[in-house]
Image (cartoon, rainbow, N blue to C red; front, side, top):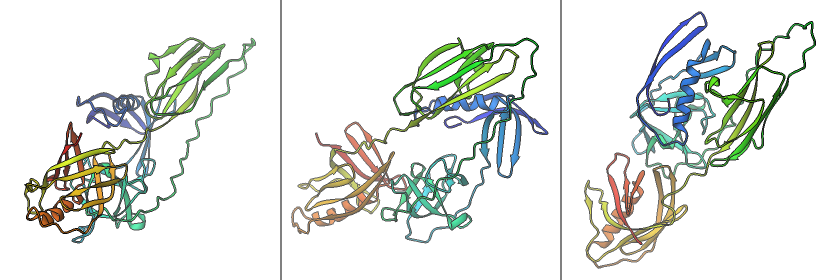
Length: 393
């Protein structure tokens, strides 16, 4: 469900479904922001399902009011071809596998699922380096897109940027028409219903105010869509400041005097905060590096290796010459491009030029990083240590 595995009792016959008794593991996840709230909303949506329809690889659950509860797509596992030696590759690191999509974003349809540990050929990346393009012969166009957060890439620093396909067109289902009530012998004042938001687009961390006003009705509830409406009764006129961490639809349920029910929705679109690069502006001294012979060694006595990370440039000194190059960060993943530098040849200390070559190769082999206080560790695709640093104050 985004954080925890879950189970439930399901009874389904001839388009009618009942889901109850949902239980789950008890992990608490802090990322992505709002994942625990999403999990509670998803469970509530599942339990509200009353009917279902299956169309090919899609299933749609609707609640008793014929509103969409959950829309899902069938997971199809794919076997990727074995990459040729020396080509850029990526290995799936997510325990539950990773979705292969038709474009770089969760709004693109899922083509298939690559299981944990699957290795495939990387043929490109998105402009923001947050998505890899992988070779999928069975997919339309022969490729698919996977999130870089769930893939350990190797030898992929120089793959080309591939333009994203047009985003998919979202077709909003037409709601079932509301039956026209029969004329009443005695004239009844008409219902007045209003549901608005001061701002419908905010940045993550900001707030807005939703407002409602109803007259000549029996009852009203205002709640985040998917939550049990009974827990959110309201008076006829009111407002509430809301600060959703992700795009959220708020729903107003109005029970009319004749017993019928009407709904109004307001969607607050939340623009995610720009991802922070925790390496930007930091300076480090090397305390150990992989020499390419399965050993992590300390710098030669009499030599100092340093590295500084800017917004997208890495610079430093490799014992004799200064060096510089570009790098990309996505979450805890890192990719360091080709490194250029000076052409001096230093004689002291002995072996300093060989050390320079080995250190730069170790830097470029890194695919993930971790900061623990004043210690920075870069790791290779197989999880082994590439470089270990100590922070320079």
